[in-house]
Image (cartoon, rainbow, N blue to C red; front, side):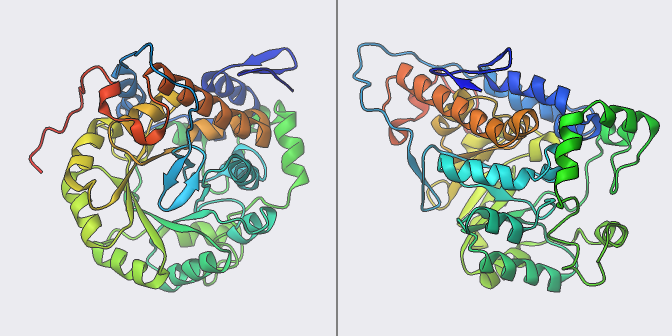
Length: 399
């Protein structure tokens, strides 16, 4: 790979944006796993709205402003970061690219932003920690019926030096994703003739998968009671996501954890207030990438009213639809103190592994920096809604 000023050239392909990484990932990742990433629930309305509503926001360009000495650095949840962004928790990352969680965590460490590991990761938290020399990463917790397992996850996260715990609130039940059903995506995946033929023409993926030992759900197998193989994990998992999740559980987790706590999946002002009352240190405005309730508003639509309601009492972060540095800038302008990328990271990972993740991060930072400059701002703290032409998503509810 040859790196030019703000684009990348690899074997006859010039990469300039996240969309080009997506196209390359689609060619290199087996279809069932690519579609797992690039899909939403039911009609995919909310999945598409996340991106479309960000595009609706327009900037105010300024000129003859001193934009020398710019910096994209800021702080998220007390942690210094090179830009207001973290890598979101994504399940099955190690199937998009073998050892995917390790590769993404290494890239995030070098870049200077948090990496968030999912409970449903392929590589275990201990494996990721060892591969990154125990550099602090964040851990995303699903609340299971088996509270002993949850306690064990929390204690393991402490032991590997995790810097924050992210509790996902919107996965008590699963949204239906048509592509996963049609592709036979399950645990383990259904090896239909169609899937086998598709995998056979992905030699890079096959070669890397054969070279790794990390092929199972490392945070669960060998740690949950009676779960020592993939078949036992399937049966256990089907019964474990807790539909009775409550804010009292969050208070209990906060006490057990004792560190920084983030709640993810907040899409309503009342839930935002309850997150504050439960003691969360930050909340993430997120509709789970449009993968859960289809028909819910885009994350960016609801961000301003949630910031207006609780932004003075809790750190508000944003997740959903970010495909460029301009999207990050728009979320910051509407009051977010940090943002998350999931699919954009996975496209880079699927396309080029660790190198692709680094490429995605650099592309987004460059776009963020230049767009901030065009708006006449030189640092993150100076960015506010004044850089946008009106605010089509202004807070509409009484707070």
